[in-house]
Length: 117
Length: 117
Image (cartoon, rainbow over all chains, first blue to last red; front, top):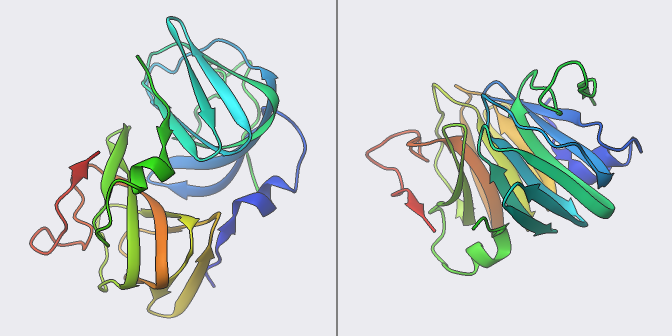
């Protein structure tokens, strides 16, 4: 039996910030929802682009020479290798897509555990 | 200068149905918005999963042995090789992700031209 994946329902199952939960797999990628608030860490991914779609709230994706503000319904792809640091002044909810196993900090030692819900 | 991609603004630039417009590239994939209404064609993609997220409205993704109803804020991934036929009783707006160059009908001869906006 195939079921729709309701992103708001998935987000309602946890409160932890900066801890992406995988909701689907797609071509070797994890499709994830995450709650964010405050500033993350500066990082880059050498081997993958980084997909952000804001489901609710607003975030800034700080780049070294620019800042991209994303409101609800807006998306951005950080190209691979580009340093970035997301920051949310208030709680925001995002859809993220990254290759399965990609550490969210760009570093396996500091990355959040990848969980499926 | 990096800019947010506002999906609603992108959708407002065209009216054609079943004609995806590429709004970003991500790891060799096109991220697309599309307006749909009515029934598409039965097809499958031998080499790629098919990502659907409903941005507004509601669609059914008919599978040969099941139907998945997707409302606004719901998503589904059709696994590669699985026959499916999307249908929308009223106009709906979707986010799609497929490898760059994938024909939307599963067949290059009948596919919509892939355009970037």
